[in-house]
Image 1 (cartoon, helix red, strand yellow):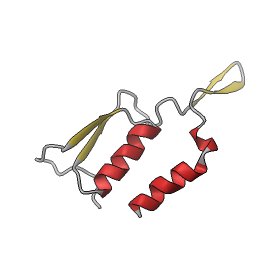
Image 2 (cartoon, helix red, strand yellow):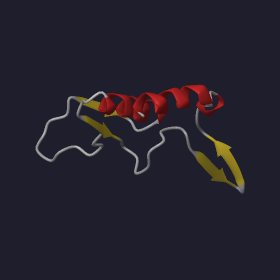
Image 3 (tube, helix red, strand yellow):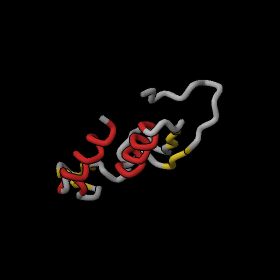
Image 4 (cartoon, one colour):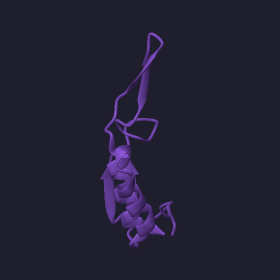
Length: 80
């Protein structure tokens, strides 16, 4: 499975956002054989799944999807 897009090919699917949903969708679509491109405005992936630090305290900005490991496991099993 190629995760990099060939230079002169148009994507079958463009996903906006490299958060958990966008990344999971891209993995599943690419595994099914589609040419997928992800566009992300930030320099980092993860969407709102980030920790910010202020005044020595850490705050979880993101969703609690990690509380559902069976969902993550299902995605990884689907793509081999």
